[in-house]
Image (tube, rainbow, N blue to C red):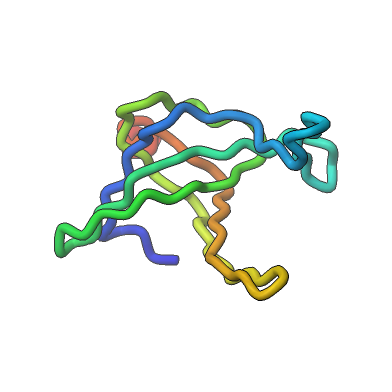
Length: 102
């Protein structure tokens, strides 16, 4: 996904993704690493804004209010029992200032 024309801002601190609210089971990747979810606002070049959650393995080094660079952002469609949506995943979420320095 080309994110070069998007302004992405962290609006909710990263937290482990809960698979089962009753048991408290936390989602992990195939290597056993904790998957985090980060809520961000995404603004396009036309000023349209959406809130989305992005999944990422490991806790990203970002905080609320940071402008974010989403490295390797991928969106995919899911469907379960007649419901559907788009889920997002990234290889890394870095503060934009850090990504610019790299």
